[in-house]
Structures are given as structure tokens and as C-alpha cells.
Image (cartoon, rainbow, N blue to C red; front, side, top):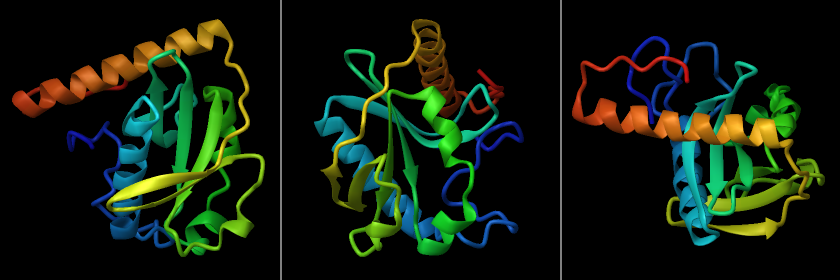
Length: 167
């Protein structure tokens, strides 16, 4: 999920001291199930992707037709209540969704976002997201960012000396 360099994104398996609300083990299982579901919906996805705003999307997914979804993973009620940044993601996607574990009280989540229930084995799209169309220039910039991020992450896996910077 990351290369470990200082400029890289936080992986789900490293718990920052200041981030006590997120259950990282649970988030990893939700991430896995969410990404499995996204593949069945014809999306390829990356986790922990930095957006032009400097915010990091938990999951940025790109469909074959160019549609872009951002999925915000919430591992607990405390994680949801502590996070005030997710509305800012709307300007970077065609659709915003939340992904939570099946036992999460989903009624507390905003109804104007899609909803995925996921565990380590898979996920279910229980509420389709409302779609808003991105401006062509923003779509192009995001698509290029996704491609460059994925390429750099793959290169770092075969050459650990590669330093991953912002895309």
C-alpha cells in the first residue's frame, strides 16, 4: 500500500499515535473486501491515494469507462465521528461511498453517499452512490495521477531504492 518513504501515504498497518479512532486491523479487512467488490464492478483501485488537495482518499477506484469513485473506509463509529474531511472528496470523484463492516450502524452514515458492507472476503454494494460528473480536466488529472501512482508503486516493489514522491 505504500513504499515506506516519508513522503508516502500512511499504510493501514501502521497506527499513527494521533489516530486513535481508527481500528487499523478492521480497516484492512474492510479494504480487502471493498477492493474485491470493486473488481466485480469493473473497477481497479488503489488505497491511500493523495489528491491534489493534499487529502488522502482511502480508496480511489477507476472503472474501464473512466468513472472515478472514492470510497471512505470507516472502521468504527469513533472513526466516522472523528473524520470531518470526507465531504472534501466529492470534488475529486463521480461518486463517493462509505465502506464499513457488516455490524457497523450504517444508519449514522450520510444517505447522499453510496454504501458498501465489507469484510475480509468480499463486499456488497447495499446503496448505490449518487453520481455527479467530474469536469473533463479534473478527470484527466485524476486518471493520470492514478496511473502514475500505480506505476511508481509497482516499480518500488522491484527496486526498493526508488523514492516515491507525490504524483
